[in-house]
Amino acid sequence: MSILSVQSVSKSYGSVAALQAVSFNLAAGFYALLGPNGAGKSTLFQVLTGLFAPDQGEIVLNGLNIKHNLPAALAQMGVVFQQPALDLDLSVQTNLNFHGKLHGLSNSNIKARSQAVLAQLALTELANQTCRRLSGGNRRKVELARALMTEPQLLLMDEATVGLDPASRASLLTYVHQLCDQQKLCVLWATHLIDEAENAQQVLVLHKGKLLAQASPAQLIAQTATSSLLEAFFQLSGETPGVEAKLARL
Ligand SMILES: Nc1ncnc2c1ncn2[C@@H]1O[C@H](COP(=O)(O)OP(=O)(O)OP(=O)(O)O)[C@@H](O)[C@H]1O
Image 1 (cartoon, rainbow, N blue to C red):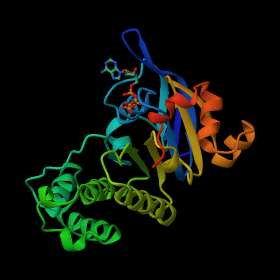
Image 2: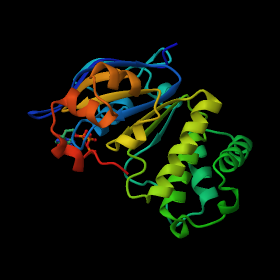
Image 3: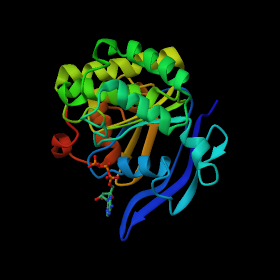
């Protein structure tokens, strides 16, 4: 069953067409949104979260058209943006409390949810730590914990591993895969890193604002008669391996 439906969504900034008639449907599962810098990933997340209205098209989350039901739709979304957004001077727990209050959770619910998400992400011992003292990897995990406070059905992760070392990146990715499986979440994981897309249920290939494909890694490789997801991307996009610096391996 479809959780997120995006139909013919377009968004331009002046003469730059950042999204061009993008359409896809997502059910529960882990979906990688793969594209190099400038592909339109952040713009897609901005329209999905209602930060910008699309110029055209429709976005429906669990039957809620976000144009008409934005607060109700946002209540079902957890988002980790590319730019870190924790209050670094506050503790982990206070950041979670603040987020819970902002979303109208009761005090008892905030307590129960924060205990649950901290335990899930192995952060319980860091609950009273000031965020500024955490490693980059743990800060991102706290942002993930915060996004999960409201028990979202859709989790949007916008290049969440940028700036992390390979071990922290792998750890965050593993946690999100586990959460996705355990809680039947729909995860849209934006990345320009091929490796982060390799274990996705499906990969959505975004290039210059156009969605070029939506299929499993194995299907993409078979459809393009290539031998790796990286080669499949080159085949689909018409790019040459020169783009490899942008679409890097770990
Ligand atoms: N506020 C803006 N004003 C003008 N152009 C913009 C704006 N935001 C994005 N763009 C342009 O829209 C296109 C898509 O950008 P977007 O940031 O959505 O891509 P992205 O895939 O998220 O890239 P990155 O990984 O670098 O963030 C690019 O050509 C970008 O230069």
